Length: 264
Image (cartoon, rainbow, N blue to C red; front, side, top):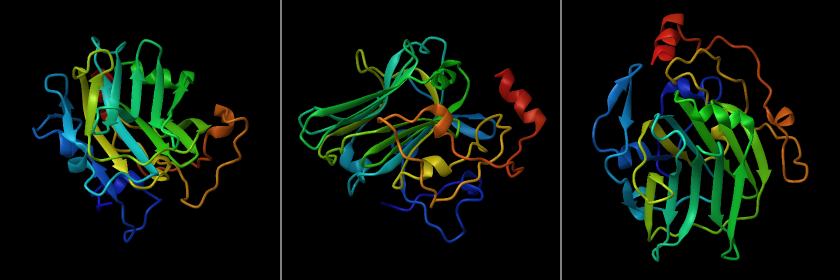
């Protein structure tokens, strides 16, 4: 995995100066034009041009078996009920290998992949805490993919965790797409600030939301070595899933910035 340049505040209290972050910035790989500036950060209005790349250009040495996908986006009025792929990889024959779906009609998030036996494995996350994604404000959706565990985070809070089957390695000879509608493959009309894949599944938990527009929350306190509680029956109830947090003033945003965000 290549080195990845990230903002210093993104992993406050978690990574030391000499720690390396590796991964793939899909924002840079897919979006070749400059976006509009929102809260001092660029954002991109999608929906006009299909975002398709050869997978080997996105992941030259392949996608690791364990990783984190982190995306910050805002839905628009016309698309808040759409069912769309945030990210999808096809093999050379055009068959899907892995995908993450955001479904506005059902207010759920779905992860699908190809299993070791070439079967399709599919998991639907239905927590009510996911409903915030569809209120047309900026939100960060993160998914940590481990060999036998899937974890979903919204705005830096753990929402659900599931036991999963093992997944087949991804073939890079096909195509990768982002932000396309499930119904017809057309680009979905959203605003995107970032979409990043880290080569470490733990980074989905360690990221904070300090850089998000209007953020007024503090960076969570966590450690890479923390071991999650055992899973029961393949599902982790929300009350047991949330990681321990301690108060911190590391990334308190100004009240003025919060007001500007709320007015957008």
